[in-house]
Length: 356
Image (spheres, rainbow, N blue to C red):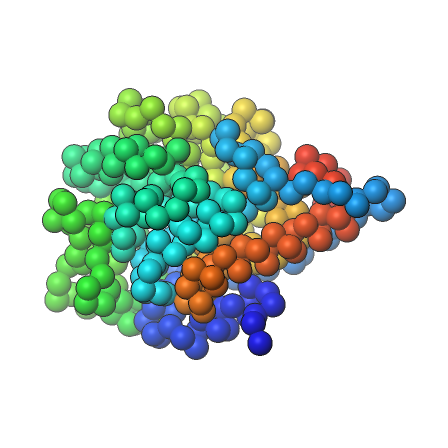
């Protein structure tokens, strides 16, 4: 029987993936406090649904940075999709395009930007890490622009790499034939050789720039005409600073519980970030979204849309492109039903009183 919800897709994926790959995708930092809280916090929020609202006709679409998508769920940037299926990021791109939503491609992809962009005509953004080698960083920006990406998503919560103990225990590395493909032109595609522990953590320590400040956001604005979205914001002061420094949007994110353990659940941080932004730019949120009702709660608390990461990987592992597409369609169906049962006919009618 096909999975009927996102949790069942994870069950299928767990049985198909190599242990090291499953642990890499599923794991969080240290004790997993934030990893669990991201999911559990949604369950603590009741929905105060409205009745007698004529919900016979509904429109689930929403606009994000000028792009109309079919429902307020986007594909979050996650690394190494070819650990899940042979077609990797290309399968994800096709699934997102079929579902009518935005895919955010990862710097740490097993497939180069150009190939992913070419396989499907859906809208794409590009997630950027700033490397110590600014030439390599600028090359990624140029290639994203030339490939038709419509925004850059700058990840800002990785000054140092979180300690993911499952990866340390497994001596996580990429299998033969898989690399950080986008960096091959700069000879930065492979993890350091011969080290114990997490090969990805060693790679990040060697390659990524831990000295970033708000001046680097200004530098990036000077290098591109694409809108720059900040991913990794949970503090209201940082949200205000993001707006002041020209961010086109902010993503409330704790990196899926993979960086600072005991960081707040993103749904808990969302209202204070949204209040700090004050409607000046869109606020998005990722982490822990597993049901259509979760999407309703996030929108009611100030998000324009949500992003999902792990569920896409579970879909890929279960059934490639079709599995990833089915994950998105399941969530869309759940969202449409929840919207109707809350008495909302459009996304614009999902508001704060639903969660009081």
